[in-house]
Length: 211
Ligand code: PRP
Ligand code: URA
Image (cartoon, rainbow, N blue to C red):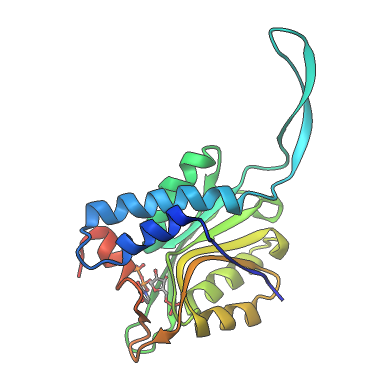
């Protein structure tokens, strides 16, 4: 079974409160999502592999450590996942960014794919899939399935979100038992329109001021 890693850093909890708050406008919402994504990046990259490299300090030659392997791939699910890219890039500036465009059909609530551009060689990259919301889990499952079809190594994929519904989380874990899921909060209710309650509303609309 995949692991669910719940961020427990007080700064993430504090900032998430203001992200949820209806009185937080788009500018502050975007800034807070960026800040939380930076904090998340530390935890998500905790187990990245290192290799030895010989360098010369002003004092002597030494062996030190650098990240091993290909550059990380950040994969935001459009649109709302874009809000998490900047913060992640501030911590992992060399990451490649691939985009998967999905939206939930308002009638069927099923994800519809409309865009995809991935970095070369995804089969050998650590991939961090970004989307603030995991509601029914349909979009997350579709994105993960898509990446696997394109050759991504399931053990090198992580899914990172701000808020997940309990049921959506269970569904993604069941469908993708090989992918670890990182989440700042788990909310119990999914309403009849498949919105997370209390949640934060529509993440894309709050990021970009649309309605
Ligand atoms: C939102 C959100 C997720 C999806 C979650 O995107 O960003 O991608 O819904 O819902 P699910 O778990 O039930 O699939 P939305 O479809 O609203 O598109 P947007 O990001 O373009 O606003
Ligand atoms: N998408 C969102 O942006 N918010 C939700 O609560 C559910 C899906």
